[in-house]
Image (tube, rainbow, N blue to C red; front, side):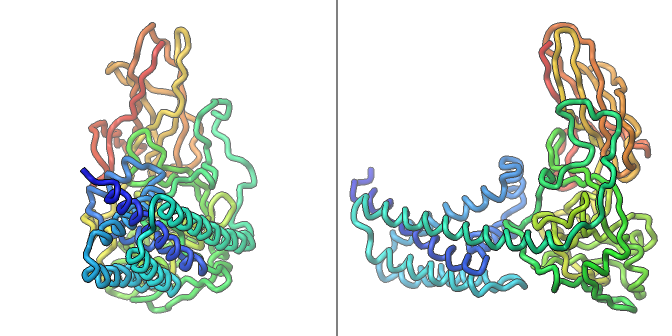
Length: 478
């Protein structure tokens, strides 16, 4: 058992870790950067796939907050571990710890001197604090309180930078628009998902803990590589060729019944038209979509060039520019492909190259061939009555469209439901029905069938490596 003195030493070391992290984060935040997010990105880039999959499954939409918490806990644990070393061993260990953290500021193309300075300062405070330990509970609380205050101040600074970014995006003005709110005949169904997902309600999925800040007046999209006519285009120039289209975007981690999917009215330039301007050269087989931080996803050129895959360079959704978390100023979207494969957010470059390019996710063990979204139905509403139940939801099968949705009660026969009017084949389609059920507990499952004849696979399967399958299942008591 630990003595009171030992427990006090552990508590003091942990408090020093909080204080050092607060100093480093505040210095990085003075330029709008984050030491915590830089470390978190490394965790996302290097964690084994089972760890990533488990984190996503357990944390859901809170994955970024969980990652930040993990960084904080790791910093505190490192402080406690360093405190246990001898005085002679601790100094080089702290220096190595600080150097490793500082190196993160040089890791990506968007290098951050403020992150480097923050890491160096955090290491300095950590080394000094561990040499002069706080005395007693009051000293530990003082360190921890100061660190927490610095972390709060850092978040406030970062929030101010984020507000400036959003103000700059608002000044871009409308990009596309919804002149008339679309309807499908199911507007009176309470609890049913909107036909068009509000921008604020769209799911967010990426490996960045925070989006990069990009000046819309200076940003240009470069089209480079194996092309006869390299291009460099502003947002205004891209908007001259942009069109609107309706489509559902689905995350590859969207298990049956989950809400990592959203239906939008997108505004973007058809990639076929963009490639026609650039004129791909012989040997250009891959279109590499590259983000400002170097993250890449590539797609085969030929189906995009011919229009067999209707891909778009998206610059707006639902009448507004893309929000920072959704990829402002531009991203690539191919309706029918899972979001992980459809293109990078925060685009800086489209590069046409050969098959030698290796994508970010290929290195992590995901297949190189794009994974297509499979038909899926979700139950949004399951309202039990005294003798009947109202059931409603959404279904998707891009790019071909939903032909029908069926329900099964208690493992019985599949029965069709009423569909709302189709907005577009690539969009999701709403549905509803009323079931007459005897008293008792009932299990209800939903499945979608695409216009191409593909029937939703009911065998439960995890997202890695081919995408999730299974039926959304709910239980009702009548």
